[in-house]
Length: 320
Image (cartoon, rainbow, N blue to C red):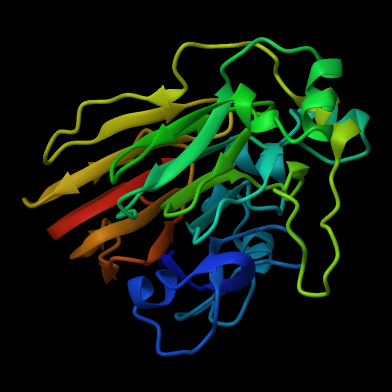
């Protein structure tokens, strides 16, 4: 089976910037693009294959045809025809709202299909870029509600100055916000359930205050306090460096300037490669040969055993 490239779903937002379109090398005009959904199985926002034998089909239609050949046997039993990961590029010109996502159990109790665990990998950010992740002070659900009401909730959240290469893991329940100046890749469960906690009194294009989900969020927040919420790792050239391993995905970063063979012969899963910088030629064991450039995301099926990478490229590798 051939590797799959996708047409990006570009989403303009109140807080969107101007980095995504040139980063991806797109010849289009669209203002305030805050997100590019690179690979999505979210109903109503399913990715469409850009080329090859499955061109114009959605990812769900391809899964229905290929089943375990694409997802892997255990993944197909677990997820069926729904692709289990949502991959995005995000460009924040302003602070995003303070948010939280429920875990699977809480989401089901609230009438949702599943929760959302995610991670962020920072790309080339603005000089003063920052983000928020995790509580820095112990608060109760009642104190949380009072701090939302009196506009002091940000005082309880850890704030990080960030730069290219920084990584944050956000298990469901961790309060968070992407800050102004951040440009990042986001990997998450296939779920679009987000509870907005605080939005800095902003108004939408029609002049209305955006809805807050104070009660749902209060039930979803993990109130445990940690000393540090950043994922620390040692970057190494020409080898995979693990960033995150959780029940929903495993992610590593590769910074390559020498040829390398990626071995998936023992893996029962698809593999997603997200190019952050550079360009390389990828050749798999079935002799499918493609060129991947910065800003492109490619999906390799579970039948792939090896991929030979030739070129200079920095990329994220993720699978379930």
